[in-house]
Image 1: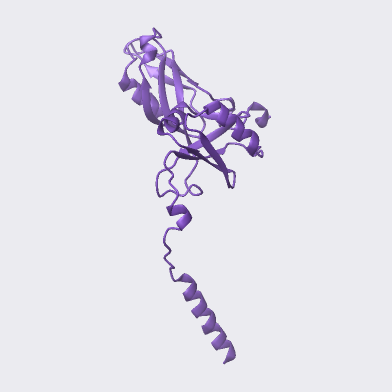
Image 2: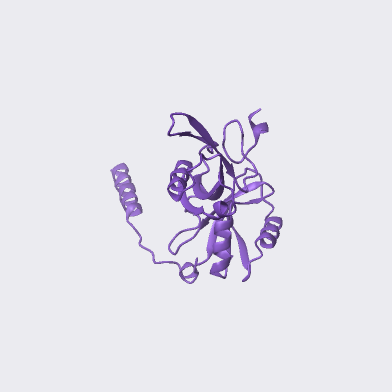
Length: 220
């Protein structure tokens, strides 16, 4: 009889544990705005020297309104800008690196948890070399950007500067996938050529497997 009562008591506890306790937004969070904030982590298994990283990035970015960088734990950092123009410049100027370690940034929106948002993509400017004549158009830019990942924008000034066979686009790419290095293009005469991709500000990736975050030595 005692065993039955014990089992029933355990069942009651288990049921109670499954009841949902609906909490409001904690006061500390509700009073904090993520406007002009980024959460980021570095693509490395090495320990990041926080003080050195904070000083280096603050000097590199040199935001007009200043910046606050804090540790969140689990290798994540919170970057808080105070002017929208600074946040826009950092977002569009990436990717950024510290000691050759790629910084994966995500611009936060209200309601997001900086510890939960996935840090799986970067936005990057890409130069596309050796495009055939007649292929320098925004339509082709969209196609190429979506081939690399997701098209973001097209820099038409490369044409204006006379680089008739170089296109510059910005795309969002998955850091867990091998980066693409070229694209085969069919020509109207039945022949084909290859367009080559050059990624700006990308300091460390493997020429063997195409993945970011390590070099060829890692594969040997």
